[in-house]
Structures are given as structure tokens and as C-alpha cells.
Image: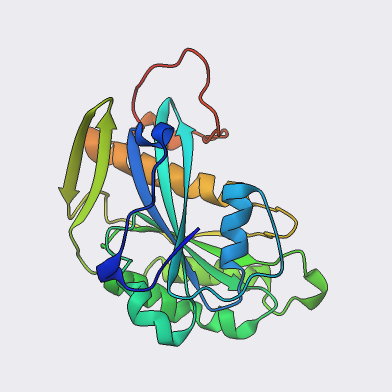
Length: 256
């Protein structure tokens, strides 16, 4: 896991040989107050590991994970941002170009929940206008210490989805074999939004971690298909498990 303290000196995640063959690359950010469990959540998803000994992230770190959705190879660049106020200028510089966000709070920490509104405002201010967002109430294994009700999290997710958005240019990468195409658009997805997706999860007990990332990638892919096809894609009705860590045998390419 690399650490990057200044976006002007940013280096892209290193690719191994197998990692260079992909159809799409999605930039995802995990944001929220310090100590809500962002780093643990990322390590649980990327490495299936957990430790309570993590120190607070300084600046911004990343991990890379490749998944498969409907016969397409998707490389995820997942950025773990610092939650402390003194790093806010650095971390918001990375919002540009992000296709999805996990906005995280700790269900045992009311202050982290109250801060969600400010984090959502930063997404709307610094990211492109239709970045997809999932609100995550982390540490649901600590039920006896809960201070934020599940209903309050769901209610806030519904309210935040109706916040006005800012328009920004966005880019994403599509690669088929050795042919790579960079798409740049300020209106990749329809602007209609009915609320943020919402999950409660636990990195420690591995509850809903994979499901959160699956849902975020599903939404991004479905919205991309809607925009490219000019009408809702049948993939938007896909209900089953959508991401796999290994490609199914004998598959050929089709829509994301």
C-alpha cells in the first residue's frame, strides 16, 4: 500500500503484468472522519485481512483490485483518504475523476455521523456532478455500543441524495486488448437521483464489505450502459451477484 501526500506528486498505482489487461478502470474513494474504519474496510475487501492496529492514514493511500462483471474485467483503484481536517485540502484534490464514493461513519460515534453532511457537500463541490455514492455505517458488530440508529442512517442517505450537484468534466478508460480509449464527458450518467445507497457493515466481522463494493460497481456499470445505449439497459435489472474475483470459463466480451 503506497502513501501519497501531495497530488502534484501523485503516482499511479503500480500494475503487475496481469493487471494491465482490463476493459474498464474505476476510481473509487473511501471518505469520512478519522477512525471510522476506512483503512480496515479497504484491507478487508482487497486482502481479506483485518487488524485493529492501523494508525490514522496520512494523506492518501490506495489499493488496486480487479473484478469481473458480466464478462468484463474491471480494475478498481480504491483510494483511502485521511479523515483529519489538516489533510482535507490534499484529499479533496483526489475527488476529481472519481466515479464512486463510500462515505463512511462509525455507528458508535455520533460526531462521525454528524460530519456526513459536510463530507457529502465536499463530494458535490469537488467531484463531478453524478459520482455515485454509498453511505456506510461501519462497525455494526459493536451493537452494544451503538449511538446511531439504522433508521437515522437510512433517513440521512435519502436526504443527501437530493442535494444539488455541481457540473464537472469526467473521464474514464475503456480498453479492449491493446486498444485503449479515454472517454471524457460532463454528463455520463442521467442526473436523476433518489438518494444515496445505504449499508451498515463491519470490517472486523466481514459483514457487507464485499456487498458494498459490489453495489457501487453495479450502479456505475448500469449508469454507464444507460448513457451509452440511450435507454435503460437490461443490466439495470440485474439482481444476482455481479462481481467475481476470477473470470468464468469460456466468456466473451459484452456490455459492462
